[in-house]
Image (cartoon, rainbow, N blue to C red):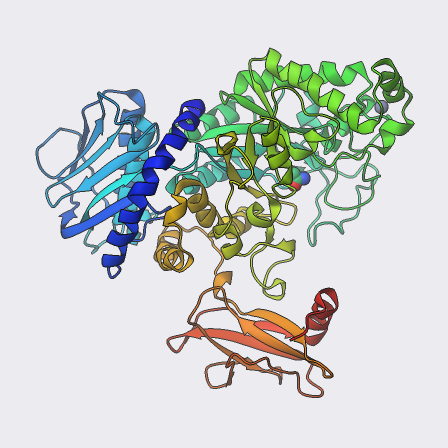
Length: 640
Ligand code: ACM
Ligand code: ZN
């Protein structure tokens, strides 16, 4: 599926350029209409009139394809849940949602595109492939009132949708989210819930980070210790990174893993929503759960516990001994079972952040370097990745890894997932390798999404607008080699599923638009308008999300020969910003920020700020200590 998408992607882009001019015009004309689809479709015309969905509405298809039948069942269930209507499948010439699988391909739609025509009597979705019909149904759901996303029946709603003509197709064939299930384990049901949420925004790849220092999460039948020992750790609660290490003999109740049967169910659940699961087994570093289970695999051969989110183990001895034959025997067993379990053509082997100091000290690693004439430990890592690529390819799969796999020389057929910015991806593409772009500063969903003073603790910063404004194809590379991109949710600071949702949404909507929508169709303020119409859908679906885009942003800057001033802004334009310096809670009777930098009065230690729209609070109150702003100043040395 993927390759065909990629081949077709660029001819699609050419036709998009023509279509985009037209789209922008037609959408502007209809700016008053509340149609708010994310990701934004390629072309949309709105007409007078509505289609009314009722208990007599039919859903039918010209195709008996199994995947189409599955999509119909899925849709019937969605509709029944929130409306209570039970759509039948007997074909009719009116009040029918008709799914047409093209007998002769419409080349402009490729594999995942669709057309959606809503008239007052019929809905027709056409596509070349079942995936396109599914995406057409997802768009159709977004045309219905937000209560359609409700998890239980809602009465007294008029289930109407406006008459439209939509033609839509994705910009990229690789549109992923990564969920780290190692740092915190998420149950099968939670992963399936995540898949449902992804499907709404037309994502097609879920990358599961299945192994790291804090837990091994997939049953490998030939290596039972991996899940007997590696999946479990001591229980700690509080601030990740500060936890005490395991005490001698302490029970390890925290964790979990997916049996192969569980994973088959997840894979099927995802397939039914046209999402592929990309498995990642992170080696040679981030391997403490593996080493804790099989201690002979590290250079030091010392006993270790699965890390519970703190210091207390020699942090860097989470690296496999690459001079030890047992390492490759083990990896062969693991990748044999992974390859058999996951239908996706790629296996992710990690490759990131390996501390190479133990290899320098290890007789086995040193002997291997001498035997293979490897000049340094970077070349040793490259030797390892090339050997792992052979193992992966011997199972009929392709290797993908984080951009560190470039160090010491890239394996011949490797695809690179660029995370330390775009440079690794650019270097790989220049060598003719395929690339998936996930630069941390735009795509990492574990970063702060607003002022850290108003957010649960994490690190870095990636605002919604950063994600939205990111462009995954650098000027300097052959764009055919950029398969697409992902948003990555690392979960060190994500101890429960509600918080996983909060960190994901709405940033993953911004990224969905980056990866699906035509570049020429992107517009931040238009996106914000559509996004605000999505929030009631997330509310109806009980999905937690961040509203940090409404919060104040604090920008301190030195004023010459004086103290410093603070400028207050927001990502969303047109908000009113109110503040106090006297530690009280500001409201719309407090001082209003007028655009000129404000200064702390003598003795004041805290600036409290809230945002309003149309006389109502919209952002969260943020209480900013003066010290924090002073520290920021020292970092930036900004002068007005
Ligand atoms: C990574 O964030 N270490 C890939
Ligand atoms: Zn070694």
